[in-house]
Amino acid sequence: MLVSAKEMLTKARDGHYAVGQFNINNLEWTKSALQAAQECNSPIILGVSEGAGKYMTGFKTVAAMVKAMVESMGITVPVCLHLDHGSYEGAKACIEAGFSSIMFDGSHYSIDENIAKTKELIELANARGISLEAEVGSIGGEEDGVVGAGEVADPAECKMIADLGVTMLAAGIGNIHGKYPANWPGLRFDALEKIHEITAGVPLVLHGGTGIPDEMIKKAISMGVSKINVNTECQLAFAAATRKYVEAGKDLEGKGFDPRKLLAPGAAAIVDTVKEKMEMFGSVGKA
Ligand code: G3H
Ligand code: ZN
Image (cartoon, rainbow, N blue to C red):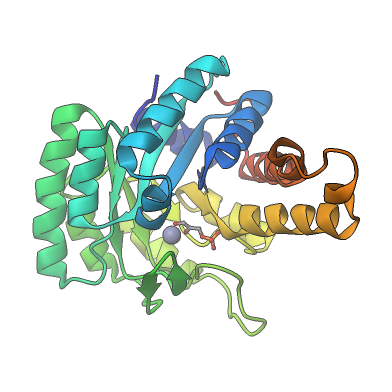
């Protein structure tokens, strides 16, 4: 059974750790992430971007696959299936498809429009008992066609959105999707402090989890971040392990070209990456 993110994030906030959101792209990705969560006895949020949803032939396919895998793999830890950086239409489609959580990324709208659309979606989400993540400010860089300017969120706007009753709030605090440039000045902890203070306990979300130094992650968790999104790092780990296998000529030995063998090193690398992150976020043993 899939669960909303509400309970797992409330526990994370109170217990001073964070739950990882790991983006999925296909069956192998999903299987690896679920395996890591089960072996770590950790709650997990599976993130699906609109692009990844399309790639997997639609949100209904994704929901059916994840539900079936949770059952057939005997997964007992809490699993939340969450739309990542969703549009208004995408959020509605995921509610219909059976996701247990949605993100509505209205950060590119005016604050009034962001509020109006977030409010409508909260009503729909509440009616189904699913969680909703909203965004204020923006995350720099690009992820699956979602481009952000990297504006640091205005605490007053964060409060307006938090007061609508969102389950969790993503606020731009200098974080970036993808790899961080060498001259990145770091997270804006001054902004995080104000946002945490003014939003009174709403679990905060840190996007762009790939490549943020461990000490910054830990400091952010201590300052109210309860959910951390990781995508690129799993992709890099998958690509590196697959390249190593191919460059060693393993795909040409015996039945090494069988996709179940060819994709195995990459899948194992995702398991390792997810486990490392869970360890760092402090969610191991918290299922
Ligand atoms: O929404 C997903 C993320 O924010 C992941 O960011 O690809 O930099 O790890 P990342
Ligand atoms: Zn993101």
